[in-house]
Length: 298
Image 1: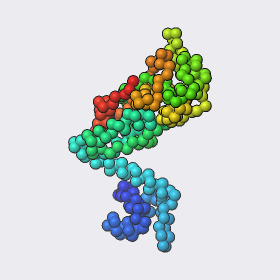
Image 2: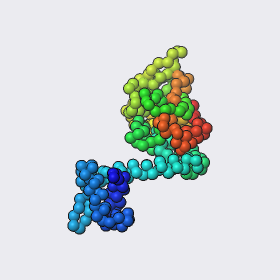
Image 3: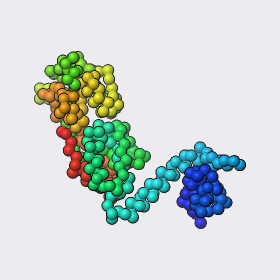
């Protein structure tokens, strides 16, 4: 009989205990049974997982890679089985969320204590990055994206909309002067993004029409938070989603410039998730929570 799962479990025990004898004792098997299980697994995979010597046992490179991958997969499988068996008891299990640093710091993290209080059986695993990640590869349940969505097989739930705003610090404006028209930006340092931008220009409404103005500057940031911090430090003029700098505007760290020329554009904010994951109680709970609790400055 093919006992594939049993062989994998035995290998993980050997890797953890460091010897066949210790693994056999933990599994209540004989050392010879453990040895045969490892041999079956190696034969099926076509690689050596364990390097045996008279005095010690060590994993091969393939063994280390297999151990790390299988430990994650089996952990996920056990979590799925536990979650399915207890679904009637409410949301539970690990909920993996991926979001941009700007949204995470300003909007999501302040709400998470309330979510955790409402759903104590859910463990939140939050990753903040501006990189566009694959939900399957990153093992994420929900990804929060700002701006236009790519063609995707994922479902999208709109969480809000945020207007764009041009900002600078009072210190920068005191040193360099405040631009009165978009053309004045030629004499200023503009802070730009090094990702997802094919044109180095900002839109403005001039004479009833929206026009693009090229903006100069010698600083590029790889995420919104980097550019925001540079603006607060007096490094130049930046263009952000209002949600990202709303607190800075209220508290005076940044001020809006060229407001009369603001074209009124903005970016939608969506939560992306796989269609099949919507059935999981922990995913439904977070999507519904965000819809009710999230207030985006726009």
